[in-house]
Length: 161
Image 1: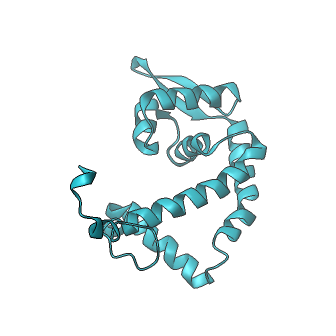
Image 2 (image 1 turned 90 degrees about the vertical axis):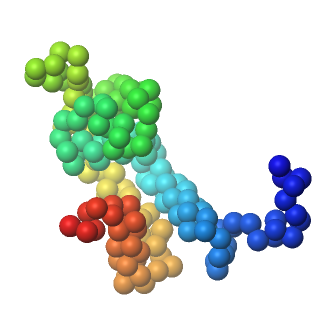
């Protein structure tokens, strides 16, 4: 199929460079920004012995309380096997526990532990200077505007309410 595409079209393919008119440009820029932000957050979490995938689950547990694994799958964009591994890791580290759900013996809810809450708070302290470095090229107003715009993109229903 690539052989059927004329050479002159290849020069206008999507990039993540400023000013790219491609309909893919925004997605590519967001992907690059995500990689950079994830790298910075991983740097903050590394000394605490957890990864961003673990922290994403802890965020859900702090925000929503005990949560069944299928809901963690949906909330984190992971898959069932991935969530099982993450929760196994969190349990092994003493950061979360699985508890029976009243009325359904087959279902377990994942709950953050006191140790998990301590790590959650410590992660925020560790991440603050790194997060500031991430947006160092932006003014305070631009940083707030970026957060607002990304929130509206990521949570369109919340922005309408």
